Amino acid sequence: MTSSHRPGFPSGDLTSSVVALAGVPDDSPTVPRLLERIVRLTATLVDPVDYVSVTVHDAGGHRTEAASGPVAQAVDLAQYAQDDGPCLAALRSGELVAVPDIAQALVWPGFRDVAWQAGVRASLSVPLFAGSGATLAALNLYARDADAMRSLTRHVRACYRPAGEAGPLPAVGAGGQQLVAGLTGALRSRDVIQRAIGVVMGRERLPAAGAYRRLVRASGPGTPLTVTATQILGQLPR
Image (cartoon, rainbow, N blue to C red; front, side, top):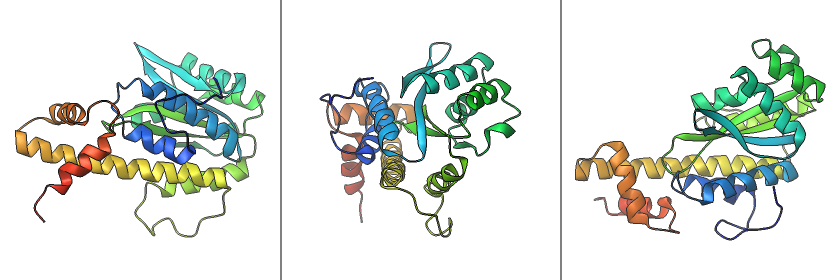
């Protein structure tokens, strides 16, 4: 990966990068660059994460799109060799997959052994999505400090729960706050886009896939789908 800024996606923080991903079409050329940036910023900013990667679907399988270094790559490869593990479970299910204690990951022995030997003691794989709302990647967070990782995991889990249900949460650093804010914003963007797709489905009698493609065409290059979706929703009778 490169640390230089590239045109075509936000030059801001981790939050804006995760939110931006949720607003671009799945096949946009900016998707790989956004994923790379998310990995780099997460590795740099988020404590207690030590190693980061992002797994994506590939023709007939899966691959690591970006990684912070060889440790993350090796832990990913151990899962690909077994065709199972937390990153693949998150990618396939679209749900968070937390491993609070690597030593207890008995169902994934290849992952467990390689991660343990590398000093990884806990992990969290977070599904990421672009404009269609379908999971297109898993952001894999690997940490040496299992206790500190539990605090971050609780915050990330809270993003997916109704407000107030998570209860009191432990403190996390500024980088963790950026990640959580990005995931929260991405979920809001997905909700706006999905509601607009529903409007297009009803108005033009299209299936969901066709309504999504119509939304992409209406947005045009460089316009986030969330902007067009908000305009569509704004036209509804109040």
